[in-house]
Image 1: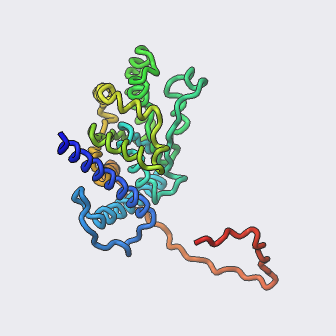
Image 2: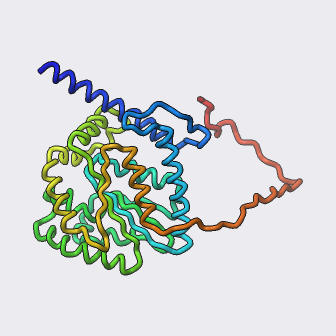
Image 3: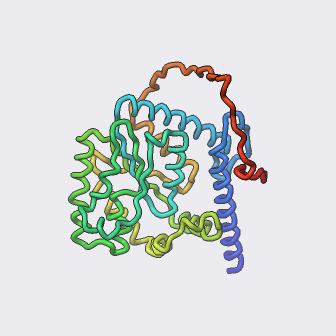
Length: 302
């Protein structure tokens, strides 16, 4: 028994270490440049960090091409990201948007509905966030909240739940007929992996804000969420808007696989841009730059 307990503790410590390293990698990615891509030790998941970064940067370059193509053609794109708490949706969304123009590609993550919104047509509060021509909208959770958290937590009635399933296929077909490109992803993780990620958030002061009382309750109701997810996919997996399942226990592979799949959904091509020339700076002999008061300067602490 003691041996099993020690093994479990070692396993938990290893998972925590991996999570800390992953957090460090997230920060590195924000500053990473091709010049810094040197061979490093192979990561525990089988992907060397240099290979991961190299592929990520390559795929992000393709995302920039996709963005330009969307703008040039006036496409309207909606991508839904669903999954259990701590499944890695936010990490993938961050990598997709990291190098894109926020005026073209934006993220929508709506809070719980307020008292007024609760009296509206269920889908009403999502409609204003749909894209105009030349825009990509990523929904970090979407109208599928009704089939997941609302169902499991008892925030909707049985009648509202059934009406959702009657309405959502028709809504999505209508969006597609209007010209919107709709892609739906479900991020799938194991029971053990969610437990490890929740534990990492509890122990990391920089991540504790990610855990809400609702998240903790969702952990207790794992099986109820599983049943709700299975029902949701069975009843809303339609030819016009199918669900795509992203195995997400391995965060890095999930990010690369999801972005690669997303790019494959579009027959995009590189858009030619006119050559950019930096204009000469205009210099006026009567221009005098006024000194900045010392009291306004940010202290050079570093």
